[in-house]
Length: 148
Image (cartoon, rainbow, N blue to C red; front, top):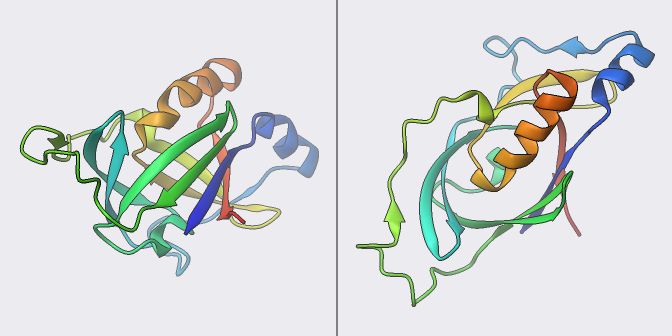
């Protein structure tokens, strides 16, 4: 399974052109995705991460995924079928850090006008998150969808 995350770089302009976005209530909405624990392999190290985002919550809990950077606004999340044999979980595994940092707050576009706050703990996205924050002074808006 492959999922694409796309940062909408010019989203404040898009929001103004559309007259704003509808903010879906995070706690009361039936659209709120369930929290998932994923294991992410990055640079031969496996990290435990938590996500709370549409489409990404379709990935089974405790799955191993790899996040690939396509460009500054596009990322592919690939669910891996097996754990790499060369990874020593005794030394190449980092349990969930207590992040709860701004770097993991995103707005996810549900359709053309509704957005949902989401929590995505993928370290590969952090430099792009920070770049977007500097340019737009806001959380990044992302689209998340199945990749072909």
